[in-house]
Amino acid sequence: MTGKAGKNAGPKLVPLRRVEGLPSEMSDEALLAACALGDSAALGALYDRLSPHLWRFLSRLAGDRIEELEDLVQATFVAVHRSAPSFRGTSSVRTWVFAIAANVTRRHLRDEVRRRSAFDRLAKLPVLPVGRPDESVEQRELMRRMRAALTALPHDLRVTLVMCDLEDIPGREAAAVLAVPEGTVYRRVHEARRALRDLIEEGPR
Amino acid sequence: MSGPPSRGRRVLDDEQLVALAKSLPPPDFADARREEMRTAFLSTVRGLRSGARTRTSAGRARRRRLLLIGALLCAGAGAAAAAWRIGSASVSRPAPTDKPAQRPTVAAERPAAPLQAPAAQGNAPAAQADAPAAQADAPTPEEAQPQRHVSGPRPRKLALVDRREIGGRSGDGGGSAFARGWSALGSGDFSTAAAAFGRAAAGKDNPLTEDALFWRGAALDRAGRFVAAGQALSDFLARYPDSERKGEASVILGWLLVRAGEPGEARERFVRALDDPAERVRGSARAGLDAVAASPR
Image (cartoon, rainbow over all chains, first blue to last red; front, top):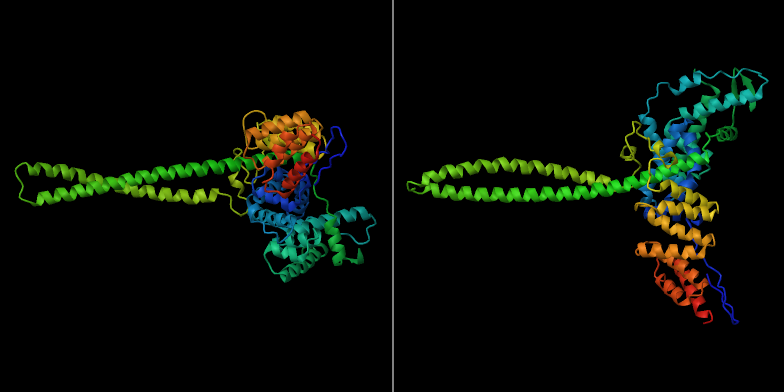
């Protein structure tokens, strides 16, 4: 940044050079580094930037109950705040936050009392009739099946599928944050797709 | 969907499967609700930080007291044991008639020492128990333990969205105003942002006050209210001379002084920013010094 000064006589207005680096202009990594130092403004900016993505990720992971999603978002960000000093840059900040969210969700779901099994939920969905002309209703039913099937997947398979297929995170990066070999990631994605397909198409036997 | 339907079955290939899963809409995450959650989250973090500091300092003080008590008791026990040995040694010699009268006194003192010693030992485990708690209080690179939430009694383990703080009714120490200021700053409404940061900084000093004062000055600068910005940043530097933002504030103030035709004072501000850790701040300070040097006197 260089200031310019006129060469002729008379008072010269030097253009104001503002210091760059408002949190809104900083990268995710810079914001996270600032958070690790206790910068509240950076923490707020990181929250603003990542919370919509985290909301979408958690809705795919844990369902669509709003109160539950709100709690999971908050719990994840508290964990992000505490873990900020440990970020090593082996993945993007977004992927790293997703991995934290996956662990938070795992504990949450493990503690949750599930009265109905996933197959019970699927059993309540009607089997798609053959040759039904109302495509929009059929599509809605398919979406309901998909949501229930996602919930029915084992947690590890679901996390890997959501990260790699739905959030478009590269397998190498997912492997780094999930602390598994890259081959395991691809295997899990394959198994998740197969299980998902079976759950949607076959339903309970 | 491809494939003939057969008894309700449809054949989905991988691409269709993923597309279908991606098309699932998430529940609505309204901006207003996100802002409320953001405010609640920052308040939670503030509570965690102050709670950790309080517990850590209280734990240290308690451990010091317990160690002191233990030391005094040990010293007392040692003195009592020494007195007992001395008394025993004197009892073993042929005693004059008044000697036996001393024995009950020494014997009376002896039981006191063993009674005190177990108490000292009993305190040690408590002191040790404090250590793991204090260590656990320090931020660790682990995931959240929602039960550490300190913003009020909540029956739900993950209830970190403190609904009492919606609208800032619970007195969140300026968090709501700060959040509004931040939102306004991001959307370019600098005057509104400056006013909100001013409200956030008013009242009792809290962890957001320093940030709020700095951003008030920055927002005023961006709003073109240069005189007010200069005053705000001067106040910030006077109040927080060791702030991590002192370099940035000095540079902004320096440029304001250049604009106001005060090159001497501007130069002082730029010089103070030359040792800032951030290269962008140092660079701006150097540019400011160049500008001051080049400006006609």
